[in-house]
Amino acid sequence: DTGVSQDPRHKITKRGQNVTFRCDPISEHNRLYWYRQTLGQGPEFLTYFQNEAQLEKSRLLSDRFSAERPKGSFSTLEIQRTEQGDSAMYLCASSPGSKMGTEAFFGQGTRLTVV
Amino acid sequence: AQTVTQSQPEMSVQEAETVTLSCTYDTSENNYYLFWYKQPPSRQMILVIRQEAYKQQNATENRFSVNFQKAAKSFSLKISDSQLGDTAMYFCAFMKPGRGGTSYGKLTFGQGTILTVHP
Image (cartoon, rainbow over all chains, first blue to last red; front, side, top):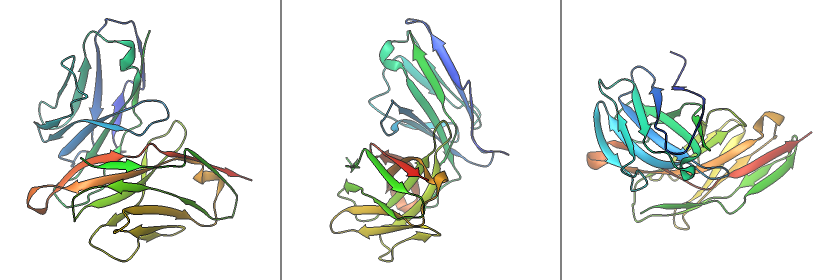
């Protein structure tokens, strides 16, 4: 296992289209996180899964955003009716479990550009 | 809610010299974790160093060390003997504990500091 994998790396879409991103975490990690990072800023938390359960969603995650992790392995993040303000880097991270302070391992991100 | 502030948008240092990146945070929690992450250009974010709030001893990882001042809510990163490969965006991040002492895992990041190491 080479780490957290995200696909695609880059996505350009027209405003109003739907997009879906995929994240494959490190295989033994049961926790998975999505973050959004705009240019020159730190990542902002979007949502968090423990196995297949989505345990928290940020208020940043509008109704147009939905995330799933159907079998507790890979996760998808879908954005419906994209807007220019959705342009950002979407980062996925995973961590191994319940130990306090466990390191999160990040993927390389999916850069979304809405035109 | 926790907040993390990095007041230095950009820093530069000559190769082999020492540089310190600043971070302050605000929380009402007594037990938590603090992290410094490094994000090289077009590459994924990797952990540099972590500090447990209940430990008074400052964390050290090779050329990287922290100055953790819990009362002042300050967590600075010192990079000694800077190398060209240290050029990156550096993020300070806060993790609060979960229920029952388990890891919650959600990170709150600062705005980042772009560090450039010059030859």
